Image (cartoon, rainbow, N blue to C red; front, side):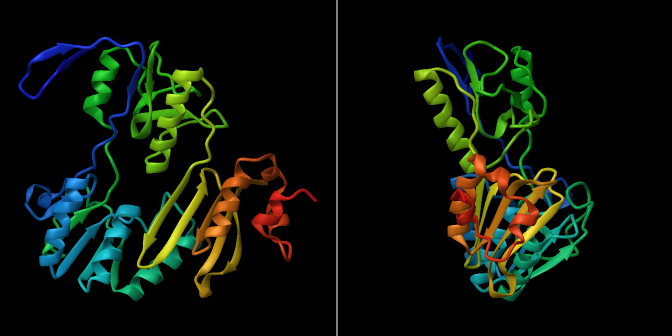
Length: 315
């Protein structure tokens, strides 16, 4: 493998096994203000440290993006007494990540904490000027790029790529002795459909999996994806992926601030979102990793007295 440093000096490394774990860069704003000093991203520890100082001096904060990063930063800013406006391209928050039930509850929760929401700002990431929303500090949380520079290099080296590096079920790439994990890896799920998951849990678990595979031999990666977010004191935890979900059953009472949303694709449980219900989240992760998940249908979950914990115990 040939490397080049910042000065253009080249060196060569040999390897028996190579793990590609380069991550992906935060997607910057592409509107007029993106080149100004007031538009920032939050991806690295250095980003966080820089924003800590800027947030202390700001009174008006503008957040672009209604995913986890945008909501979490908005929540922190609001709890510090800042005037916070959050712009969303879609009609609700967490449009790709959570159900409308959970998203609506979080929106109301953050509004109560002082966050103002503006929905339907569709062109913002491309060309719209931010002048309509004056702010002392602007933070963009609009996802990550597919690391196009690295993907081009990987493709030129002979790796199969498609919006990331393609790997098999064991996380091997198309070239012998090379693995890919984390944000850049597109791997097949249980249905054989390729996906790329951008989360700490995914990168960590895939790293552990590849380490075991190199030492003990390859096996399929089959960990249940899970995610978490803390926003103005509320804890959201998600187990599974809601791709194809078309039905939901709510356990608990959203008005009380403690509930779980079970999401189904047809009759199959695929995802559980828990708000301030950590026990439900733990049970959901165990359930989705077991054969017992097949017995949890929308009708079964809607039965009086049903709990996720009870579904783990054979009748």
